Image (cartoon, rainbow, N blue to C red; front, side, top):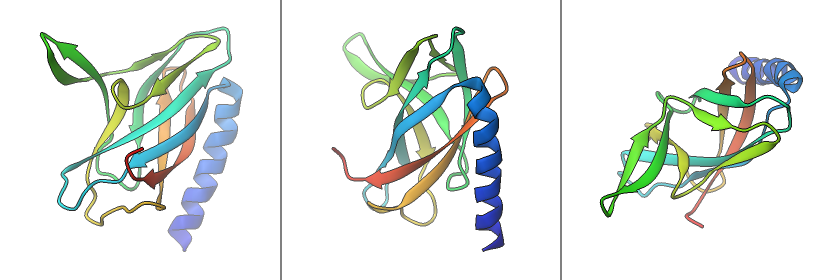
Length: 141
């Protein structure tokens, strides 16, 4: 209970700090993985209403040991996932992290996540701001 309250307070504090940056995250979801899957994926939309370009430089989650940023591309007719050190979010624009494009990859946790579960993510940006977002686990759309 104390840990959950601490995470909630930390999320609130960081969300208030992020409000100054103007960056927002919406529509976050995690794809439910089949039993035995070693990786999971998460998707969301990041909006930047400011006059300055921004970059997503890292993501953390208490549910996963690691969160990696990837982009799906086709090279010589083969689909591949390329690791991304950052993801650009243009001024007055948005970037959709979605299947077939930018997305988050995480090693599957010890306890299987099922449709309806919620996962917290902390998005870190190049201006030292962070945005907390809650993603809902759901089956493949």
